[in-house]
Image (cartoon, rainbow, N blue to C red):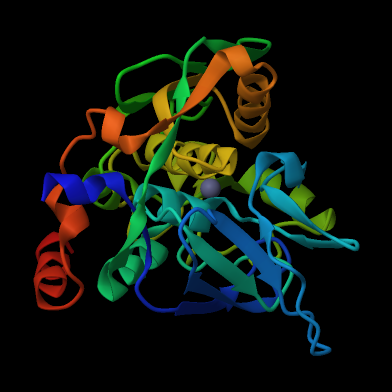
Length: 318
Ligand SMILES: [Zn+2]
């Protein structure tokens, strides 16, 4: 069994999600399709006139903006916005290869978390591919700063994230989470955390044409020291967990899973993108290592076949 965890995976069958873009407010369908070994995660768009753009890797070198969400350039003035939650689910659930297709300009926000993606991936199951997994092993620490905020990638014999946030709101305040990645922990402890926003920002964002699809159904909404969602929070520290979910999605844009430790204080999409480009700025910072040569933690969850066992598991964690 242990050996299986060193092999690449793709989704066993296509899975589709229909919803609205959180910024555009427009309806959109996103499909995750199986892809060949060593192809990584790529994305293409159906343009509505029968044209489909060529798939491009969802890679940090194609990021055009990181304000509020992460947007990828698909060429010919076509882009795909808000890729971070679906990328987080793919990376968090251990999917190495997949093709994402979109029939609109922005990925659907669904419930504001990565759980619908993660749950569908778990339900359809993963196909184990012949090729060995590869990791981006951090050899030399890279730190990027913006005032007192920072993001760092450091050598570490595992896959860990240590993330802290500090907001001037009594319901958030200072929260820290240390996370050692396995797909099971991602599914249970991270994937359900929803995005969040402040009432004081909402009006300005909407006037600027953002957050048009944002609602209490897909965002935790904070009004100074109060949470407006009638059912409250999914985790007591849901805010830092969502930031961790975002960081996992942003780091997936490195093209390979990272073997090392990510640390961040008051970070976000922009710092996450900068620390990745910092890592790639010198070949002395990293090396590409086959999974056979790493002490990958065994996670039985990864080797669950789709079907009964998974459905039973899903019922037990709901
Ligand atoms: Zn997010």
